[in-house]
Amino acid sequence: MPADEIYASLQALNGKFFHIEDLSQYASKVETLAKALFYRSEDNQLITYILYYDNGPEIFITMVWTHPDFQNKGLATNLLSKLVDDARRPIQLDVHKANPALRLYQDRGFRQVRASGDILTLNYTPMLAIMQPYIFPYIGYFQLMAASAHVVFYDDVNFIKKGWINRNKILLQNTEFLFTVPLIKASQNKLICELEIQPGGDFEAKFMQQLHDAYKRAPYYNQVIGLIKELFARQPKMISDLAIESVSGIFQYLSIPFTWSKSSVVAAETRGMDRADRLISITKQLHFTQYINNLSGSELYEKEYFANKGVNLHFLKAKVTPYKQFNDEFVSGLSIIDILMFNDIKAVRQMLHEYQIL
Image 1 (tube, rainbow, N blue to C red):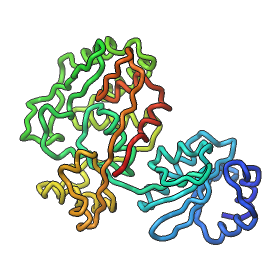
Image 2 (image 1 turned 90 degrees about the vertical axis):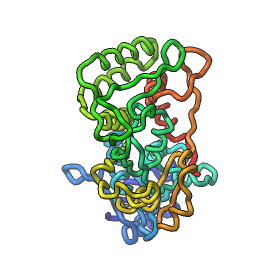
Image 3 (image 1 turned 135 degrees about the vertical axis):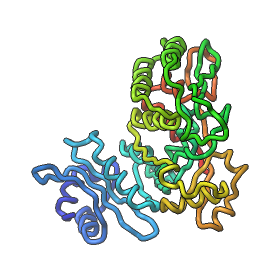
Image 4 (image 1 turned 180 degrees about the vertical axis):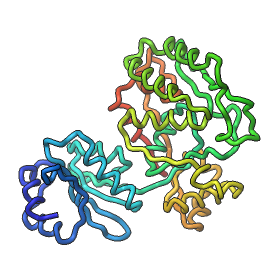
């Protein structure tokens, strides 16, 4: 990218969220040594860009800029997603704590590693998550998804009765209430992807009435009930598809990038392998070196075993911050539906970052 364009775009901003002593020298250095992702308008006007240094093992982002007339259109988000998805390597950047772009980085999985005054250093480590598809799962599940660069829905493993694949909890009459999506001949001898939703009947109408009775006075009832109706209107035949849509649809509602695949599609040939070995195989097959699991997985998997096979294993410790429901007594462990009913999009997005990686 030409140095004069870089200089012109940053001149008015220098000293606000960043301070470059010699902007002309910086622009020349970037033109010579850095790489760029950018968009231009139809009349060839520069409208947004990401400048970065490719250091081999990792990438350092030195600047993200968007023309004022084109801000809040998702252009920089698209460029950042492309860089993250294509690189699949650690990425680091520095950002002022008051810079509105901080949320952009957090939504794409960047985590703070240190602070120097008002400048935060963020790091992105591309991790893969492999999880069974659950219907409208709790916030910890979404935190795991948000911490991952890509999610593989583990849909070709055996169904677990009384698990969370086809059921979850909402708040009804100030206490937890378990709802269940009826399935045809559900059996632990069948794979999740083989189980069909019971057709006909009145489950959907009954569920919508339960949600109405439970949350009609919740502040975000209208938005959320509309989202849920839209998901059911797609009429997925298999419980795995409905569960996946209950996750991907909510990420779309929150305007957070989310990429996923199914193990039955991308890794069917690994079926039958030892549990840990299959996770390692899928991770490497998708060209990741970092695998992340919920903290409960620490009882099943050992970091040393994964490391010896070329994969770094991480565990996510979820955090659920109490929020205002109808009464002062907080009821935890409920479906994401409950959180969406009582919190605006900004608050929910913030909750997705409240975890710890071990």
